[in-house]
Length: 125
Image 1 (cartoon, helix red, strand yellow):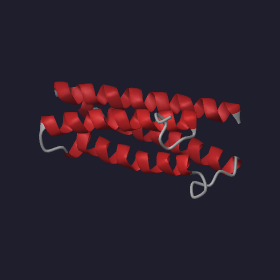
Image 2: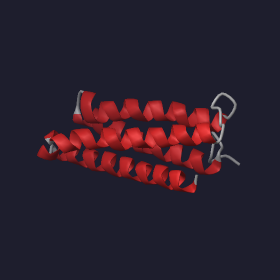
Image 3: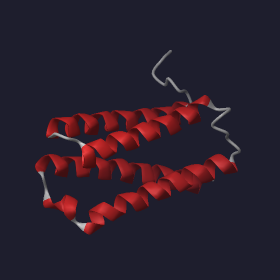
Image 4: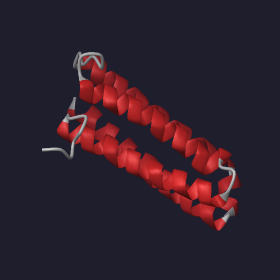
């Protein structure tokens, strides 16, 4: 199971690194964003990230309906995806895209904190 966890963490790292990079390119209005591999690779990485998460949850018999921290991660993931879509695709202005990009990064950090602490409010005492 440790190798699956390592793989999951690696995919999470690649996912956020790619998201940050694409956000910077978005702000620079870089032509890189229009390259085919830039559009495809994040979907592959994020799919592998999700599959490894599902595999671990099923293997460890962790039910998100019984574990609040896991449900919090799932809800935060949906928020992260929505913010990412606004940031990189559907934002009406550069300011809106930048704000969505920063909020998505904050939500991603929340997901990481929840993963480490197994608490839905990881910064509370």
